[in-house]
Each structure stands twice: as structure tokens, then as C-alpha cells.
Length: 439
Image 1 (cartoon, rainbow, N blue to C red):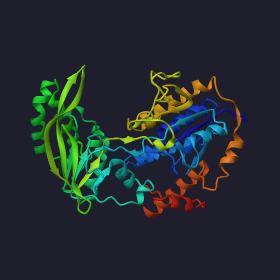
Image 2: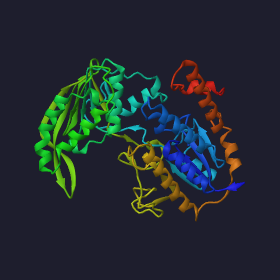
Image 3: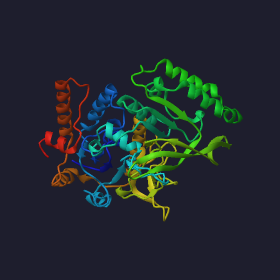
Image 4: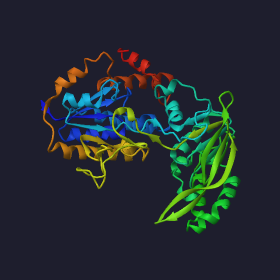
């Protein structure tokens, strides 16, 4: 049967929800994924011990993939000089392309010492303990004194990991702004609240209280948040001491290539309130903390190698969309001509890097699909989709389809059962392909 065909790049929550929305509306969806297994953030970003959540999402996403209008192509890398480029997909006849590949590139701060041994990006650590190839096979030694830059949910997960692994004496989580702007949720903080140095936290809140009061912020609200988390926190399993610091931005990582990181220098910030918003502004004062490990939980960047124009850490999204959804733009614009690029859309973290968790990314994917559907109402031609599918499957590179994903999940579930584990997944692409008999 001939249908209009849409290529989706990336099979995380945004891509999977987008695929279902398009498929439900009669489009033939070709879902390309660089990784073998689908899920993206849901598979490789959620803390490993959230077994029930991960299992539920896998079941839901597998249900999406089984839609008759969705074809899955795992282990296929789309981009410039990769398995297929965006222009090659367009030449195949796809009526629209929706990029939902997330923000999987390291976001560099561009400060001295950032490449020293012992300085990591949160993406590397999270991908390592969640067994995302190739990070799963790399070594990221964690020392005794850890500084985490950023105080969002990712910080909470990384602190939880450092506490649980043992050997970490102190974790110092540092925020650019103040206590009223902390980004982590209580549900995440409860897993690390038991290790919080309460006396130290009280002293830190006391230090920043005058500035908070000046801005009309109530430090008691922060205290209430922490107290509630502490009431429901996990039991203490290690002696790791967790401390928080506010109003500081990293300015230099100090150390050498042989000994690695030794200290982290921060510039002191103040808060300025303008037009009902609060922003951090650097002062001339600096502070230095001892550290042998620094982890930057400051968000990620989109992949410029996919072939879309990039503006700082995000793709260049049109300011004047022809097909806006709920007032938001999902269209890509050429930054030189300021003209929209027809038939190219972005959603999820590819639209707004590092924003929101699984549910938010999924909803954004659905809205991106609606934008593509509005475009397809007036553009594109029906194709013999079986011909495109047959052509793609002639690739010499092993391609994993949705039936193989079902098989892989069954194999891993059986291994988990035999080993008495709550969950198991192969840590390398080679092992996954071998288990499927195609590697």
C-alpha cells in the first residue's frame, strides 16, 4: 500500500511518541535509531534501580513499535558521513523528517582545566552506570572528594550513584544560583537526603539568607523542602558527607595531566532581579575547593553531526513557524537566510536541549508530530514504502528491527531470571547483535 512516509531520527521518548502519533494518523513511519535498543532517555537516563518504571516504559514503547505503520531500524546512524545523511533520506522520498535524537553531545564550559583527568560530564557517568555502549565499556574513576556542578535531578542521581558505590568521602554539589532556584525534585532528593550534612546546610542557608530576603525569597521554604525529604529519605548505608553550596560558578579546574584534578575554583555570584526574573551575576570574589573528581551536571548539547544548523547548544529553530503547536515552533530555520527549511522538524531534547524528563519529552514528540502532520496535509506524495524498506535492509551493516527487539528483551529477561536479578541488559552492541545471531 502506498502511503506518505516520514523518517524519525532517534527512538527515545520523543521519537517513540511522535512515531505513534504519525502512525495513528495514517503515515508510514521509519524510525531510525543509532542505538540498538529503543528508549533513549527512558532506557539510559533513568536511575538503574527504578526497575518498575523502566519495565513499564519498555512495555509501553514496545506496544508503540508493534503498530503496523511503524518500521524500526536500530543500529543505524543518521548524519553527515554516517550510514545515511538527511539529504539521502530526502532523496529516498520521505515527505518529512523529524529529528528526535536528543542532546547526546557533551556541553563544554570552555574554562581552563576542563579536560583534566577526573573532570567528567554527567552524560558520561549516567551512560556508564546505565550501560549505554560505548560508555559502558569505559572507565571513569571516582575519587574520594567529588564536586558536582549543578543541582538538578541529574545531580541527585549522580550523588546517589557516588554514595551507593562506596569509597566517596565527600560530595559537594554547587549551584550557580540560590536555594529558591534549586531544580531537583523531592522524589529524587529523598535518595540522598540521609547523607546531607544538616549543620553545614544550615550554615549555608544562613549565609545566603540576607540576599534571599532582599529578593523576597523565603529561606524557610527551602528548609521545609529539605525537612520533608529527610523524613522520607533512604536509610544511611555509607558515611559519605553531602554538602550543598549556592551562588557559585566554576571558573577553573586546577591540576595536571599526571595527578589529575586537585582543586576547583569558583567565582562567587550574586542575584539580580529584573522584570520579575532572577539571574546570577558574577562578582570579583573567588573560592577554591579541594577535589579529585568533578562532574558537570549542566545539561548537554545537540549533535551537530546530524546535519542541521546549530545555535549554541541547540538546533536553529524557526522564530516564525508555519505550523506552530500550542504556540511553539518545531521547524528548523537556516540561520543565514532566516528562512524555514521545508519538511524538517525537531522535537524533544533536539528542540530544547536537556529540558524535561520522559513525560515532557514524550508530549513534545507528539506535538512535533502534529506539526509534521500539518505540513504533510499540503505536501508530500504517497510512496511504495515496501520498496524503501527493502532498499534499507540491503545494508551490509546489521540492522535490528522491532521483532528482534522483542527477542532481545525476552533473552535478557530470561538471563535476569536465571541470575536472580531484577534487570539485565547486554552492555555492548557486539553482545546484543551476537545474542540475536546477526553480529
